[in-house]
Length: 387
Image (cartoon, rainbow, N blue to C red; front, side):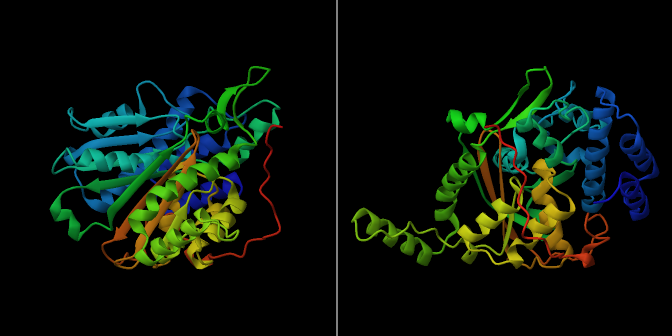
């Protein structure tokens, strides 16, 4: 774990951020006592969001006037004017842009936003959709003593990602990926799922997010429903037949055979699940879906290096595989995210080209050679659920 001073030194040495941004990071990280004002929270959001967008525009060469759709998500920080308005104002985006701010969506918001952008691009021709995902913690540290709320203080870190989608035919030659499928599952109709992650005040009036003992069950149910929808879209015929045979065997009462879970690894080359729940959830997903250790390396190393950056986490995972030079033309990538509601979302991408392993703006570029690092498998995720 790096100290705050080490984080500042690394940010300055990387050369990625301009000096004024590093100066703001010094103020935000090193101020004692911490300042949880609205001004500081907005400054934190702008630092992350503008940095991600600046890097994206510089890398793609896209002009801001060509962006026709803007979707920004931050679950717990929703200022007035909105984050979408902050971006429109800063970059002077055109007045008829279709803009949306998603709040309260939890860790699934980025993948949900990609699916939303995909639908919007089907009715807005010849344009770009900019999706920006972040989280904000300046005003959202829990200050009470309720154990079911304290966990959030150690779970999340600030992160950010900016993604550009296009429906312009000319961009097929330069894009990294083609969006193949977007599948979303929303279980908020279930009271148990709805209440398992819940923002509220404690008895002393301190605001926090409660995580209940029902989280893992709600997550399992949401993921199962998502897989039922996704499976027929991506699985080969052989796996579909095998699943049907097991299903029929169970219906006919022939033996006590366990239900067959298709091996999604036969249809997917890279798996990038969200990190909610830490190693135990990653272990279970690997076991159930049939992925090899190398295919789970990106999420495990992201958990170790960056922790849970909420909705942007799955983009840090893709960046890891890109920095390792593992994304080859034709590969299929699966991003899965789950979070409050309870929701589960999946996105399937197809690599349209082999992705260059070195990219200066990749968050792993300065240290990718140090990974993977062997993780201690003896530890358990410190859940502190309410009783």
